[in-house]
Structures are given as structure tokens and as C-alpha cells.
Length: 127
Image 1 (tube, one colour):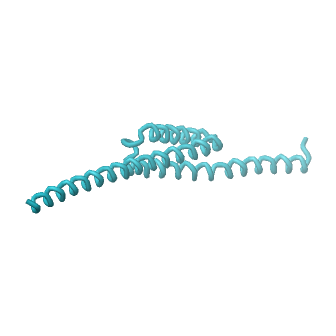
Image 2 (cartoon, helix red, strand yellow):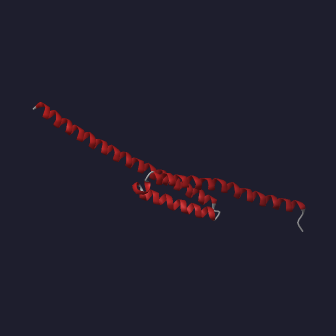
Image 3 (tube, one colour):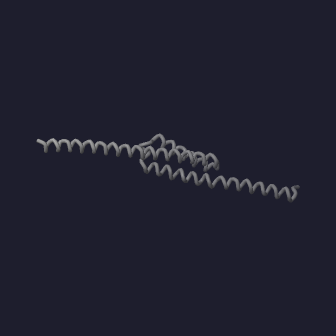
């Protein structure tokens, strides 16, 4: 038969274990939510077309993080969520960079065309 002290110690150990699980669940759940938002933001920025490899990696890691969360493997879920966020941010940065490069190229082309028109107009007025 267990003594009162033994029962009390076992009860405290069980409570400590449950508290530990709960304390791991909250950050993992939050990190998965943050990574979901990062993937959504990258998708909205056009990263699926402009950085497909990074987006694929981010989506895969987010899916695996959700699976780990469902399996109550909070450490793995948190790690994968953080990796998914990093991949999504990289994809978004690459997409933004590609858009900026395209806009710069278009601007340079417009400047070149304007200079050509200016040169033609100047040559016409000199004749």
C-alpha cells in the first residue's frame, strides 16, 4: 500500500509532466500559425511563380509541422514551422527582388527609348 507521501509525489510528477506538455504545445502552435502566415504572404507576393523551389520547401515543411503538431511532437513541429517560415521569407524576398529587377529593366528600356526619340527630334530640328 502506498503512503500518503508517495501518492502525493506521484501526483506532483504527473502534474509536472502535463504542465511540461502544455508549455511545449503553445509555442509550437504559435510557430505553426506564424509559418502559415509567412507562406500566405509569400504566395501573395508571387513567390510560387518567382521562387518555386523555396515555396515548395516552405509548403512541405509547413505540412510536416502540422502533422507533427497533430501527433503532439511539439519540438519537431516547432522546428519545422521555423524552417518553413525561413523558406517562405526567402521565397518572398526572391519574388520581390525579381519584381524589382523586372521593373528596373523596364525603366532602363523606357529611358533608352526616350533618349532615341530625343536624339531623332533633335536631328530633325537641326535640319
